[in-house]
Every structure is written in structure tokens, then in C-alpha cells.
Length: 275
Ligand code: AMP
Image (cartoon, rainbow, N blue to C red; front, side, top):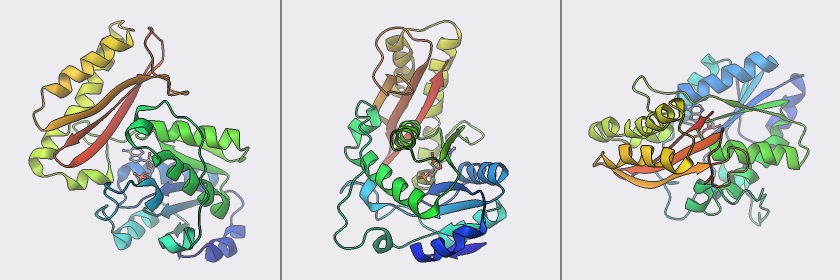
């Protein structure tokens, strides 16, 4: 496995691979990331992983500085999962002085977009750059970040990128907590409390399986579970169309139920698609 630090290194390596599957990450890799890598490798015969904590998708009061980083560990995990090369640039390599362009897909109605203004323009901008640098045949993203998945699918379609986008299911810990690099922030008692996010989703899934289709009722089921956990502070619980991200008020057969909550100082997100 090779480590590329510059765009030029990637460009000289890229012709070695006929088809290439790509997994963009912010590093501190876990099993959720590695499943995406194995999928990319299986589909294309070669896999590239980017490791880049993208400053322009963080707001001033976000966790950019303390976001966990461990490149040596990441490289070992990526290699064991079958990665052919890792692209891990410094911020100045992607954003030299004078960089001003933003890619904005305009999916504005999503709850995460409302909670983090500018976040998805930062994501769409870096992913567009990474796609242009890596030139993958396929890119694999996680359902864990449902709104991001919708943004990337729309980006690829609207701009005719010619890259297949695949969304892989959310990898979870044994108790149901969605795997996330940010889980490393949690104290033991916070880690125990964090399971409330997936429990809240399960309550809505149970109601949906019983025939409930009213988005307000399904949302209320999730909220009730979250409210019972003293360490959790709800940011939002949202019911939306999985593709347009528009909020739903009428009964529907496909509902994206997504939520964000703070457990102590750590903001976690999770979601499920009902139907
Ligand atoms: P991140 O490093 O958090 O930016 O995530 C990089 C990619 O891995 C994104 O496509 C995420 O959606 C995906 N991902 C993160 N956590 C999980 C998970 N628990 N299950 C599946 N995919 C995930």
C-alpha cells in the first residue's frame, strides 16, 4: 500500500489502476469505514482511501482541533482491509492561499443542514476535489450520514460526474450504537448513555412495523425515548423524505427518521429509513 501526500503523487499513481473504488474519510478509522473499503475493493479490484479532516466543513465552534487523529494506526487498518493507496494531504495541499470556490448542491431543507449551516457546502467542495484528484469509478459512502449521502448522490447526478455512488448500511456496536470516530470522546458513563440514540430509532421502527405511518407520531416515539436519558440533550429529531430531505407531515411509506443529540460535550447523529 502506498501513501500519497500530494495531488501530484496521486496523479502519477492513478494510471496503474483500471477501475478504482474510493472511500473518503476523516480518519481515525473504525469497522464502519473498513466495510466501505472492502466493498470498494470487491467491486473494483482496487481501493483508495482518503484521510483528511476537512477544515471547511467545520464551523468555528466545532471540534476541528480536537477531532481524533492517528495516521499510523489508520494506515495499518487501511492496508489490512485491502487498500491500494491512501491519500492523506495537508490542508494547504487542498486549500492553497486564495482558495474561494464552494460547491453547493442546494439541498437546504435537511435538519442537519439547518443545524450546521455551510457544513454540506464544505463536504460537497472537498468531495468534488477528491473525485477530480482520485478519479474513481465508484465511491462508497455510509448511510450513517444520511443527509451527506443524499447530497453526494445529488452532486454526482447534477454535475454528471460519471462516478457510481454506493451507500452502505450503518455499522453498529453490539448494543446498537452507530460506529463513529467521535465515540472516542465519550466517557464510560456517556458511552453507556449513547445507546439511547439507536434505541430511539428502534422505537420508531417498532411503531412503523406495527403499521404506524404518521411522521409526527413516529417522531414522538423517538423523542420519548431520548427524553428518558438524563445525559442526552436533543438537537433535533426529524422526519423527512429520504431523497429530497423535505420535512414530512403527511403519512408516508418511506421516511428518513434522523436525529442528533449531545451526550455530554459530544454531538452524535444517527438515522434509520423506515419502509
Ligand atoms: P467520516 O470519517 O466520519 O467522515 O466518515 C467517512 C465515511 O464513512 C462516510 O461515508 C461515512 O458515512 C462513513 N461511515 C462513518 N461511520 C459509519 C458507520 N458506522 N457505518 C457505515 N459507514 C460509516
